[in-house]
Length: 123
Image 1 (spheres, rainbow, N blue to C red):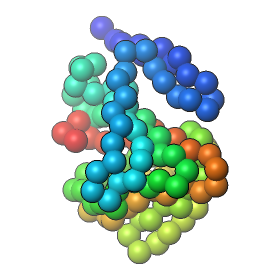
Image 2: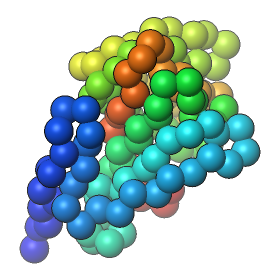
Image 3: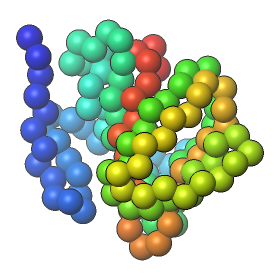
Image 4: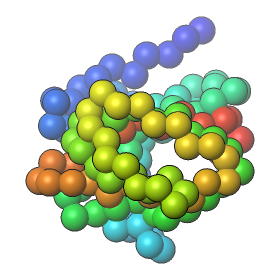
């Protein structure tokens, strides 16, 4: 049977019923939160769908993994490092990050960056 996590947020505060938020600031990650919208708890065997929110002045970790990422920007603008390239993205843009490519998201301006990220199930 399928599962629905109802959206209970506002355009400036994304949240879903039954989805815990994980706040973290570890390593070279500065600020931010993560919600696993679809994953093992929902019975997803092939992929994970996560929502990340990074506040102004923060950034994601500079990291690389063997798995690829699909990212959809929900709100805010950001600089995205992908390998040796840096591009600017905004709400509505879609980003593909291949496996083993260094990547990092840094919000621009006064608005938090929020994005959906899909990765393989083993992540």
